[in-house]
Amino acid sequence: MYCSTCGDERLFEQPPCQDGHGADCPERMCTDCGTAMLIGLPVPSPATLESAAKHDAPSAAERAA
Image (tube, rainbow, N blue to C red; front, side):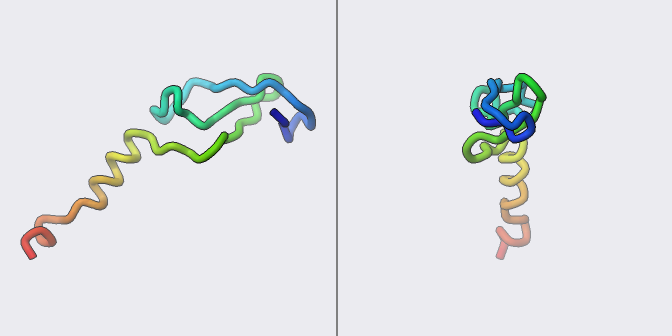
């Protein structure tokens, strides 16, 4: 893959995911310089999905209406 920091083709690896994506993590890191890239579309982490579900859930007043 092309690394913009190194200015050439470099090997990229998937670092340990801090966001809970596991094997589906879209992050890759250049093994030479450490530049990070996202591959494809980001996948929401389980914590983000849970937070969004709580935010989108109707309140008790909305359910009563």
